[in-house]
Amino acid sequence: MVVGASGSGRTTFINTLCEQEVLQHKAIGDPHQAHLEETVSITPVHVDLEEDGVRISLTVVDTPGFGNNTDNQHTFQEIVDYLERQFDDILAEQSRIKRNPRFKDNRVHAVLYFIPPTGHALKEMDIELMRRLSPRANVIPVIGRSDTLTASELKAFKKRITEDIEHYEIPIYNFPYDEEEDDEDTIKENMELRALLPLAVIGSEEDIVMDGERVRARVYPWGIVEIDNPDHSDFVRLRSALLGSHLNDLKSLTEDILYETYRTEKLSRTVLDSRQSQVLPEDLINQSVILKEEQLRRDEERLREVELRVQREISERKQELFAKEETLRHLESRLGNPSAPSSPY
Image 1: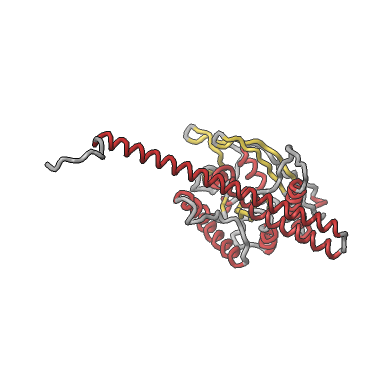
Image 2 (image 1 turned 90 degrees about the vertical axis):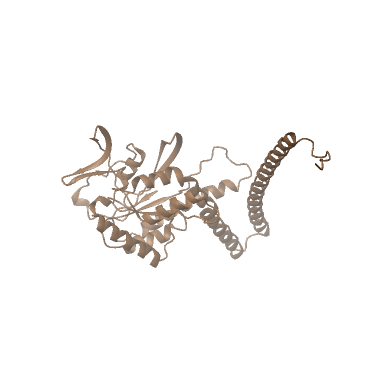
């Protein structure tokens, strides 16, 4: 999902990310209707991509109309409601006795929040929306159209945004890692990505020829900005993280943390509402059964994971023992029969 006010670079970024026209640019409207309030239009678009030989079915959710009104409270709620509806669909499917094998999981695994390149700090709207979205999705702050800032301005802008995020305790996706569980390469990569937050991106739907090669770039009177040049933009690092290195991590956090938290809250509220409305005891029993079934399902999945891990460890130990036995047999063949008495001379 991409969220940001008009002109923040959402559309160009998505088209650059997917290397095709996925979203259409906003048409110039009638100036006589500029005073009218806009409603946010949440638009999911499905696109097939290929990353390093792996086919990826990607759903891009755009939010045109967000941030264009004086009061954006209703647009905040519409976006949060969309995220929660996807959770509700999963919860309803998991509660069925017979599940639909063709059911499609439409949960949003990452929200790219586009911050306008003002060079100042986060606005109250930015702080409020990121706070509301964080419990329902992995929020990644992004500075759109970052080529409008100089290198020093961009560095200072990133610093102020990071300070605001820490001050207001906004739980963004900060490329987490575990020093005890993760390997050195993973820790190093995540530390580098965390240091880049908020990521500064540039998009372009046009190619130019440089040194005999076609590259995606933006041409200005003062020079050329290359989209895929890490010295000019964080676009390549962000694309690699979203579609490659951190794709599974984003999905896991959505499933194990965000969705599980929402599911617990939802079912707890349902039980509480049932008690307050004094429904029949049979309904409360059914609700309790659903909760227990879900808990059993999660416990069974964890048990299967433990069993698989134990089996792998046993297999590895057997292979080590076989290797050691083979080494001992080889030594015995070289030294002769170790049980024969040795000569004192």
